Length: 281
Ligand SMILES: NC(=O)c1ccc[n+]([C@@H]2O[C@H](COP(=O)([O-])OP(=O)(O)OC[C@H]3O[C@@H](n4cnc5c(N)ncnc54)[C@H](OP(=O)(O)O)[C@@H]3O)[C@@H](O)[C@H]2O)c1
Image 1 (cartoon, rainbow, N blue to C red):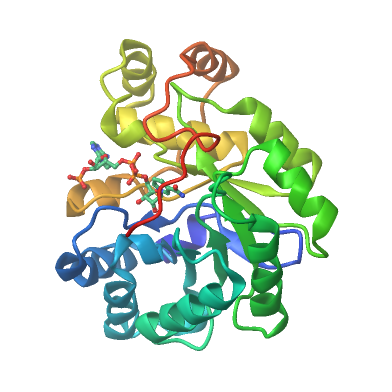
Image 2 (cartoon, protein in one colour):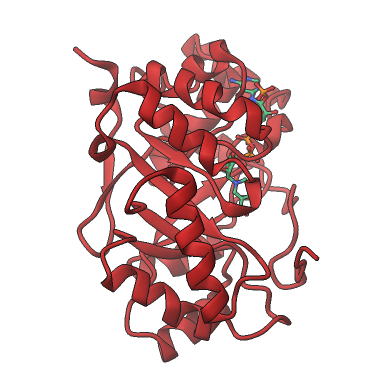
């Protein structure tokens, strides 16, 4: 049996299916991205999460080509860079994404940050809707949007975002935003799912891991999967890439899930979307 058959898919609100487990390429240098992504594809991953801001979309495209796997079997997400929120700028940026990836479509395209004090993201959403209608983005969504940002999109737009990609891990469980997403048929994607490694020494996670004969990273990723979120851990270490894919041969108990819920600290690893207005110069 092929390993990729073990990854469940989530059906987005427009009917598009996304593998619940993918591979993230944030902070992988451009020159290393092809090899890292290729290692992930060889391990069975069929979902890659990149962004214009990461500067490594081309490496993802090169890996897809080098893998020999049909483009249609790989789910590719990218995100609109800060500083390109003006609809005309967004159109130029989106064309560059397709060119860099070497494909005439992406499976999912997101507004990376709401940037509440920079321009008007509802106008940006209008451009996103055009990308969707043209068929060049099979699904569109947002990232780092709080419920009040999403309400503005609901009020002004005609398409409900398919996805909201937000920070979620045991130390920042973000349940209020997740509940809002679920109520509005928006799938939640959990970024920094292992808090960039910060949760891996947690004694509670360590104890659960030991009881299942699994690693702390596997237990944490499995916790996300059982909560129904979509995850794409990043690693440039082939053994970890493989380890992070082996999540579907065990289940957490109710007591494990309750113990994980108790780890909440309201501790972000990244910026607060209500305060983050960074635009590269
Ligand atoms: N939308 C957004 O604003 C946003 C923000 C952040 C991230 N993201 C997305 O989410 C993805 C994942 O988040 P992330 O990259 O920030 O962090 P992460 O996946 O939570 O953690 C990555 C770090 O953990 C290490 N690691 C991975 N697997 C491990 C394992 N099994 N055991 C021990 N250490 C392990 C990696 O080290 P090595 O690489 O050295 O192995 C790396 O330092 C990103 O790549 C990106 O696609 C989106």
